[in-house]
Length: 157
Image 1 (tube, one colour):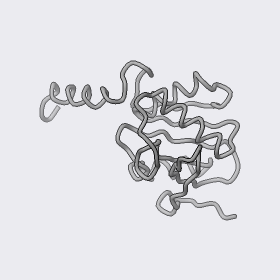
Image 2 (cartoon, rainbow, N blue to C red):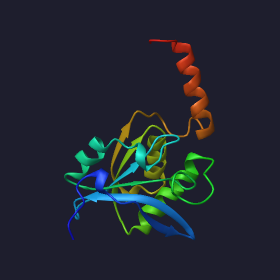
Image 3 (cartoon, one colour):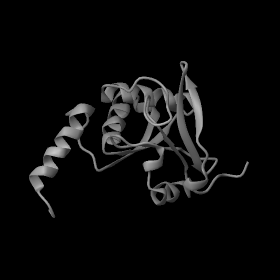
């Protein structure tokens, strides 16, 4: 099987987890530890920068997915980072992986940290980008706090 090399060419797929279909894309190397991308608040598969995904996919299997109830994934949207982490663990296991690297961006970094806590044997490496400590703020408060910070910063800052 020829590996898909660019995010632009990666078809959307689904995997059924307990009767709920999760949308994802897979590209890059056929072998090696996969990198699972965990996206920011309000993001869907199409929000990943292809240059970032393609760069990682040059040497690793790279997998992005939509959280439950987000984008093309079915189900009720989780109300907590803990629920998102449980879904991500179920997603990783449904794809048959025993160990992965996690790339968590913003809210995805919160989720990655909880995954590493709850299933440390599943996580080989953890990359946290544009994020903070997990558990400090629930997802519904993240957007409100970020908006407040932007208003305080004012225009042009």
